[in-house]
Length: 425
Image (cartoon, rainbow, N blue to C red; front, top):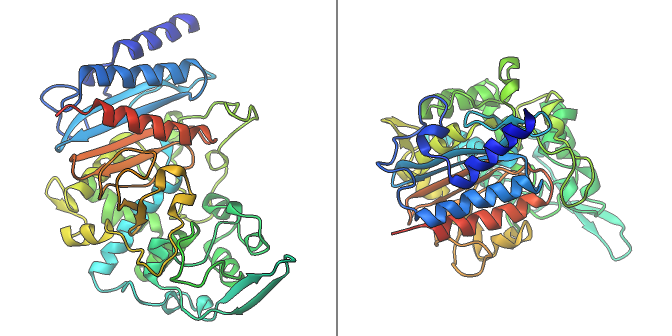
């Protein structure tokens, strides 16, 4: 039976699954008049063949791809397995942990308070979290000795949103400063309550002077906790009220319900590059707070609607989340000439990018390994999810996959080439 099921899935991948047959339930956006509209038939076949090859060669267990073009759902299909060990086929309603794609939603939620005048971007975060009133800047000498001096600048709300705050991820370096920090957002949320987490960060030396360098870290986690302070609700409650309910994202949450666990996509047991066992800790461990940097779950259906809302200028189906000028502000480059731009250090495909509020923004074409246009914006997830918006092409791309190792970076570049190569004007 398993062999027959596998053969059936692979045959459908190679032949190309139609939009209609791939869906479970109502489509997340209005359907294009023809499946694959805006893309060449040959290009779509190459996309199908890519997923078929990656799944057959154990480079990924499965995926869901959703692409909107000109406001219409052009591609929406599952590939491979939700759980390859049990031979459970992927479905379009599969749930994935978003990892850092959570950051984009948390930023949008915070910007709703900005629009209400409750969260000025230039305000110091110590207005809500007094622990950050007097931060220390870490300095490491040639012998590896750490000393600290008072930071000159306060951390502002804008510093949180654009990653210029100095609150680094401990897992992204080996200096004595990095050792003060948790490895990442999900690790922090599993091990600390929100109050414990804030106290730990506030006691740590900063890697950079606030407002002087882009460095990936805990800014959006702190931002989420500030929105909780303003609202008196959990971050999940804030996003449900201000984003998810308006956009129409019924399967997006921080706490995965027991009834939905059967839809949770699972990674391959062995990393295809390192050949070491792999797992996603947050799948089985409860988080102690809603971490805006990593912890949300969602589906391709929900997230393609979220991306379309941003492309539409902050509204979808007559419901407004943000004003169009706020979205334009969010997706502009916020790294001025005096800020050290380290965005490309996250991956080679980020050369030529600046950073807006919660998203990387392309400022120059032709420098990055990935194709695209000036003004496209994006952010991906460490467990294999992909998200980008290209306003010039009027295109939103969401790929939900579960590949937590370095293979995910290869998938990002290859899928980008396949999608842009398939465009057919």
